[in-house]
Image (cartoon, rainbow over all chains, first blue to last red; front, side):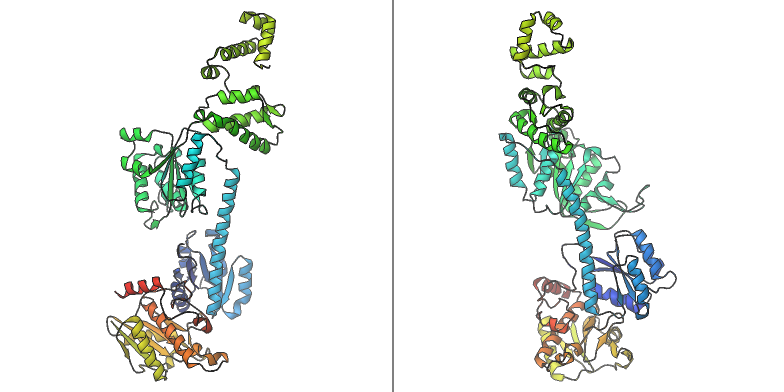
Length: 451
Length: 176
């Protein structure tokens, strides 16, 4: 019996038995196997040593002075439902042992126990525990993947970004992702993570823009029960959760001075203590951060620590805004159309040429996120199988004019505006435009305008 | 630091001498082979027909007057700790004393013909294993490392007398 994986934290075993010789010999036996051990002589001592998540396995003598093992088992389950309980019984109390199995104990051993049996029992219990928690993690991950968007783009600017992801992903280098809001910085971070050796471990996102002042440290490093008012339970911080995986700091430019110092320390030492605790926790993580602010300027203005900036800005990837890669717009539109039509169960299959033209012309200040929302809305409001200009929530006038200053484009926009103003009354619109009705009909046809 | 070997109802002198020289080679410590120091009578459990190894350890410790020394009791009787059916041996983790038994290492216990060579090898491995515990080494995942823990006698034959690389580095560190 050996502690399964040296890289993992050693598993922990609590032995609750009123017989000193049993406590001592089991403690010793498990210590030699590299487990973290603890012992308690009765229920009270055991409950004092019990905190959620502290003990992986608890050996529990069925006969204890005061509160017996059966009752204690229930108390333990209420404090830490995930603890694996193994009952210790003398030959005479097998009936009770069976009862305790029904109450949710993992197994029971009869004193004296065969060393080989004990060793397999503990190894299997730990294996099962690890598999269970891995299973939960994997399920969460599948959910994440299922919901995740893909990075879409064939423009030269995006090809460059893809190349950079490919280069940096397998390394453990810290990556800084720069880009306007909505360009998909988190997607890039996830792409880097899922192409790295850490992909089977979690990627934990911290949205630095949403951190409450004063709670940042607890968010980063977790806290012990009672560390501050309202800290009713011990809580793991994001860095602890990311052990073995990746930490993604979104909007890293928004963190305050104190958090900057904390961050710098954990990056340099890879260790920290929980708020209100004194146990030093070692973590192994890769750091990816993202910002839409000009951090260099913030450094110059003294708002962002220079040393931290250099720690974060080791390898930087800039994502171009959508208006600088317009050739990707049709690709993105069709990608989202397919995806959203599927998820909303609407038979929308295409985008009309003039609607596509409009999508291509628009400046997209909210970038891909805005485009995705525009398509989503269009899919919902579309009446037929094709998205038309009318379905698009894009402001029609000024932006379009600003985009295309040709006389034709200006004319098209002006005619459309007037028609809308006059509620498509052709006579009055033609009057207002100073042209005759036939000319207006021709122009409507030419520009593909529709009510 | 010195290493003392104490026979406890162990009469095979040749085996003891071989063990002494093996331990000297492995631990690079001066080894003294002493005489039987005390009777095992009090450590006997008539119900189990076995001897309490934890009791033996505490008696061995009484023999350890020197500040820094290791004491290994070698016995032919069957050993137990209260919660387990048997043990091959027991040691104080990062302490002074260890005990090892040849009782369950003998092939004849399992209905096989006597095999003195195999017994010698098994006893050496278990003695090295228990003594290394007194230096603070714990069980190792390497199947061939002497610090790997096996619970069947025939499995002891899988491992070697040697420490794996990381255990041997650890032992050197602990010896300092």
